[in-house]
Image (cartoon, rainbow over all chains, first blue to last red; front, side, top):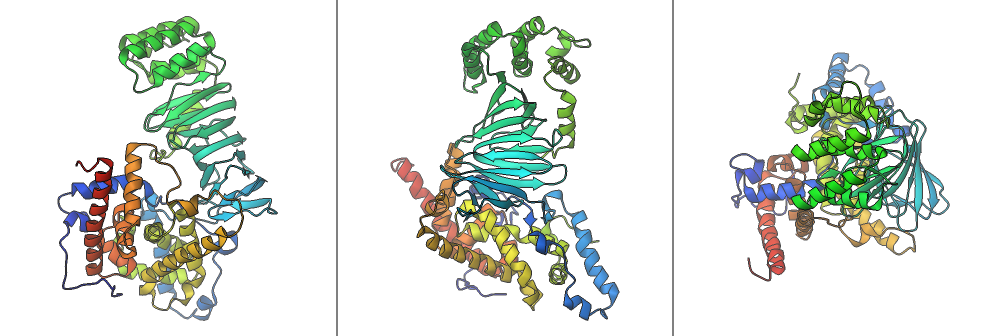
Length: 367
Length: 197
């Protein structure tokens, strides 16, 4: 073992057991630093090997020494192959040659990692784990045959997290993307600092501000916005904002009245007082049109007690409850009845979302 | 079958076997080595290069290591060998960044001008960035060990096993590094509160 210049065997400084190996009584100072600094930790992303070296070539070494007892060689290989099955999924070595996504340089010099695309380089590849960054004068687009096309606006940063046959995932740290997706619903996910956006068969624009907040506008189909069990569904013509640590706000159609939108914004603010929120809710309900059933459906699960009853009354007046839905059931947030009521809005089949929920990684969440 | 609750729980002999298998072209074995050592490489790089470039450089380090692996004669030296590649890659990054700066190219400039690319947006994030900046201002020896312990979550024994340092060295680095970090953070807090703590 290498002797370090600072090694002083005579000096064995006393540090807490917790600081040394996390045993013993937790050290609050160290715990606090660990918690603060965790956001900079390695994210267990996969290693991407270029295709030309991803496939293992039989080395001369192996061929020359074929007299080595095959049993021993097989044991080593068996160990290497079998070990992944005994590792937790977070430690799985996703050693992907990975189908790289195509980058088209639209304008300026987008960067892949620390490397800038040169002026005469119109295309490149983005492998899983790599980051594509645009500055104020550059734009690019990403495409993948089975997925669709994503345009990256200036001052944006995206990272390719996953590119499996049925699961493709980007991380948008900052900036704006315009996605046109033809992959089946639920297969394309974008992580942002304050929510994840799940494509449900659509085209949309997703923005992330420097403070981590985000906005989504759907132009075709619908999108699910999700954070720690808080969901918002945004159909074509609607938009929704999201805030760090709070998650998706309440979606609304962009053609709603200004006073409706302002009141909804006030209601969504976590810091609003009870009186302010109550007044804002009253405005939202008074201004709501049948089309705004989208918003009222979401408000059912974001209100309690008498407020929820008021929302239900207005919602039922605008959109008659379908067969199988009762007032009592909705006030108790019966999941089946809520799903039936959502489907009555004819904005998207909720089973698509439920299927995604069941099949997605329960640990998946933004940073 | 060996219990494999975490990548570092494997006996050293198995690890040597993995290195041997990887040397013979077994990509699964190399993938396991990546899973076990990515945190160490990430920490070594994070203590030397801007945060926004670290993930890409981690990939670079393993891509550099793969073709060179067959030249490693003593497989037990793999941890220190890989750590050296990571440190060299960081040095190379700064060398290239320096020459890159001299060109009138169009970049975001984030990697050369600031340690952290994303502006802090909340009190806790500000604190996190301040804490990392403070660690990164420490002498290299201390900051690497502190990053591995406090950011990457490795224990002292893990750091020793992964980097090739002795337990004594790691203890000294943690102890002295933490002393200096406390002073730095204390000074920052004092400057923010006008000295009233």
